[in-house]
Image: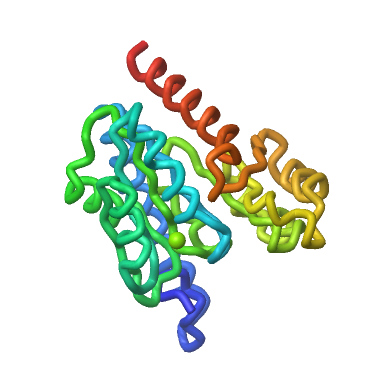
Length: 237
Ligand code: MG
């Protein structure tokens, strides 16, 4: 049940629900635009990581950060409804990190991200990861001002996630299919998952990875470095 998406308000009239939703989305758009301008001014390349709970977002960061920090300043904003467990894991990996606990709310919003970026004092030219709350529905609605949205699906989930939760995939730049080491043991078709993703978003890029194995991360790290350089060239042009 979400405290801002309107899904928990059975006593409210339809017109009032619509007005509240419009106000929330307009406010979020305003803050997302401000965030995007801030990121551009400070050359901060920002990725919004989204997925179901347990798809491997935090593990992906734990294994990627030590490799990336050799090349770029890196910072992480963690989003969960409760606990600082993920921020503690990221801190152990050596990155600058802050945790946002959303309570009953099932997504991060642009206003909260703006404050977190200032609190973290994210360095110019950084790569900034935002790990969203595990949820394939509500985070799709909330632009955070990021440069790229990256959605993870693990092979232990259904391969039809892209078509069941299409909004999340329509707005994504990259689909990471994770836990490829488990593929022989589960009923998951990589081809079908990619086909569904392309049906809802023909331009989405797709990569297969195993987040907790160094050589399984190579396609993702190569993609990220290319995107960072492309953004940097755009900003300095
Ligand atoms: Mg996590």
